[in-house]
Image (cartoon, rainbow, N blue to C red; front, side, top):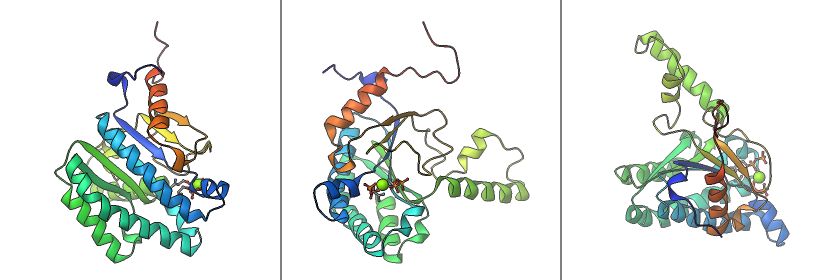
Amino acid sequence: MDKIKLNKLPTHVAIIMDGNGRWAKLKKLKRVEGHSVGIESVREIITTTRELAIPYLTLYAFSKENWARPKDEVTTLLTLLSVYLEEELPLMMDQGICFNIVGELEDFPKKLQRQIAGVIQKTADNSNLHLNIALSYSGRREIIHAVKAIVEDVKKGVIKKIDEKIFKKYLYAGNIPDPDFLIRTSGEMRLSNFLLWQVAYTEIYVTETLWPDFRKKAYLEALREFTRRERRFGKVQEG
Ligand code: IPE
Ligand code: IPE
Ligand code: MG
């Protein structure tokens, strides 16, 4: 296999981690076991991102719409998140990972909110990799949230004009670059309400591989494909 062109890697990778349930079903396991094994993929993808010195990674872990899933599945997902954060914190400190979330933190149980806030605070000065996890996230709600904040700031006279640059600052992670590359596992050709504003010119890659099977090799394959893409941003093809 060709060597990956490191200078052509994306700056910001976003991933819709899908297919845990189908993976479990194929193995005749419970859906929640798919989520458990999916955590191993999360670890491997974060470590690889760090090794490749890609500075921004956003992972879609739980959508606003996912609250409508059966209660026991939601409870398991929250428990897995809490255990994950506890186990990963030392590694985040070792690897210089700055953790943040995008989404509606207030939807979570108070104890988990405090734990998340603690990890954000402890890792705030790390700068090797900015890891954003989308939790209780909805792209449409993010846009409405931004619009409301803009209206307030216009009323207060904090801002006088609204353009794309200013609008972006009001998004949850308004200070980071838009994703260059969006990966969705398990074959679904949809955005499922993820980063609607930010993906305007993002390169999209959909793989049939289910999230629990999406490990380093599959990730490198996806990144290699990105390095071969020609981005045009509406301009005429080069050469
Ligand atoms: C992704 O896997 C994880 C979450 C959405 C929390 P799914 O649970 O959506 O798995 P499928 O799509 O049912 O296979
Ligand atoms: C998208 O997956 C959300 C996450 C990966 C967290 P879903 O499984 O919820 O999306 P749909 O229902 O297939 O669109
Ligand atoms: Mg799914």
